[in-house]
Image (cartoon, rainbow, N blue to C red; front, side):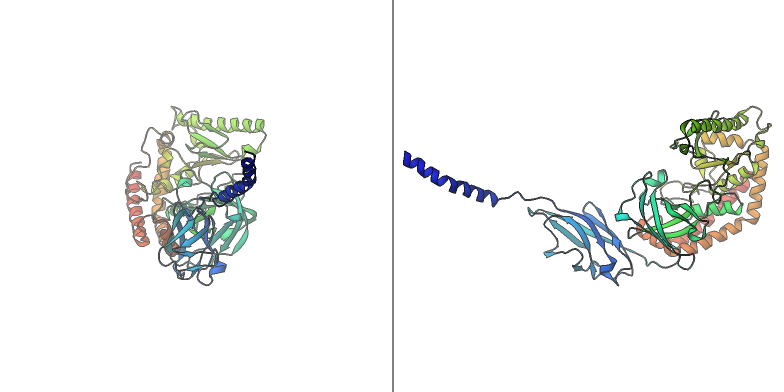
Length: 504
């Protein structure tokens, strides 16, 4: 028995060592297998690409857009991944080193330590050559950070190539999303804040700017047409529209409209330090706001900036603005209207011009209301404007379908607060007479200038339009056909308005 115990004691270390060796020979292997980033860097691929192109990884697909001029047969991809290695077929891929022919479909396979696999298919789309027909804005966020919020700015750099049309520019910026419904479409609108004021693209120097995406607009011209009509009417504070190409973090994201931020400044909406700028919008998402007394309009205070005042002072100012606006509404709602002194407090000329633009463009958002602005300067009258947001105008019926019906009435539903307010104003014989006069003047002296502008604008964006369509595939993709549709629709709309105002 003693001898047996001795043998066990002698063998025990050997058995333990053998067990450890067996355990060490069967380690737990990782199942991680994922591509984290994918790009084609310009410094590694010259002269085949003009700039770094960053891919978007969506599930098992890598989406990447390259200019048509790219020689895709000899490209080097850079990537980050989790796993043991990355392969195309049996060939191991080295980030920033391995050359591949991307002119045909490729599948990248990430293999984990446990030899499990995950495939990623590379989907390359060709973007028409970037010709210098419009300015090009390049934005690089710090670290390639995503712009995924309307509330939080992301820091970065901006570079503008004026392409001989405007001065070039380079500087630092902050950028975030903007818009209400438009923010939730694939092509995003953005708000830019420069670190230092600058006169970008020939406009008066400021820090704050907007990039309108026009995702719903298959023509990429609706807002430009409306703003030009307002400028032809000499409406105060009308934004300028400049078409641009935009590249964000190495990826071309389409044709945008570059324009001023809607803000009270000396060279923007100049209502003065004691003026007021209000937005009527059912989104009702500003900090300081009220529903009007008689028509329950959703009124938001854009200026003064009450959130920058002490709370007590801000609330007192809010009450003052609310009471003043309600006094205007009292006159409109009174059974003495239109035979009272409403027009001593409401600018008839501004309203007539405003209605010409909205009738011509059939911007029915007045009914809700949405994106509807009204301002006053100190002791001045309330004036409609500036005009804004025409994506849903021009006979818009469904996704990517404008210019479908030219004889739609501007006001159409008694169930909407904006309808109640504006249709009440349209009971004034004086206002209707002024609208009729303004329209007839516009038709006789300005309408042909608007059509000329539209033809000119289409020519300017021709190449940019094609590039945008290659990315987003909205509408027909045929700019000439869209142009003829626009002009035909506007001519028919003008005939409709002729008939409409003849009854005033």
